[in-house]
Length: 206
Image 1 (tube, rainbow, N blue to C red):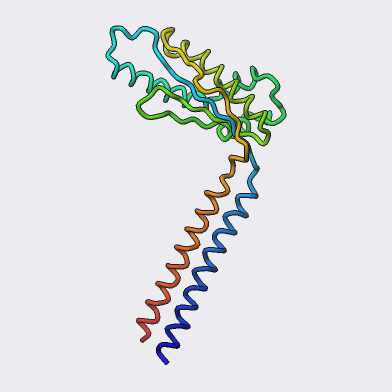
Image 2: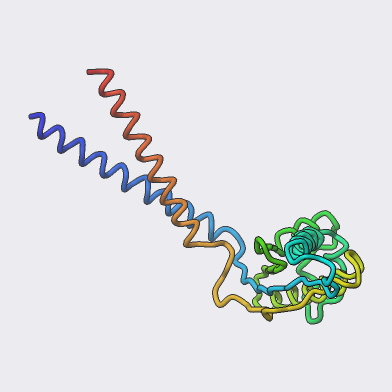
């Protein structure tokens, strides 16, 4: 009789884990598809200094890394956003709302920056429901960064494109595989927690 109960308990535990992981995965995927699907376009920029004869390589590298970080933050500002959107050719201006608050909020979600540690390399990505529009935005952003960098940090600072804009083949947002795995993990953890709680109740009741 105990063996039959143990088999039944194992079967129920297995079903609980399968059910919670499936529910977690399905829910995560459903929430993903509720979000707008967007393509991405990414460009890599190299920040350099023209006069580095009197500066040791380590200090020069740290300086360019700090500039990359500063440019990364400036890109999110409303000043840069307006300059980029106004100078972007073939950009669908109706995508961004006229209301300043809504416009800034959407811009914060449209661009994404990453600074490679220990380098002066800045990666800029733009997201849009249309692949061509994402490329237009990131191209305009790279031009604006190259134009404004000397104004903010001196004429010896240069911003060069080392990788031309590359548009994604598939949707980049939301990250459906990542969200699915996250939902799977959350569902599995919930199932395990449920089983552990149930086992403790059975143990205390016995």
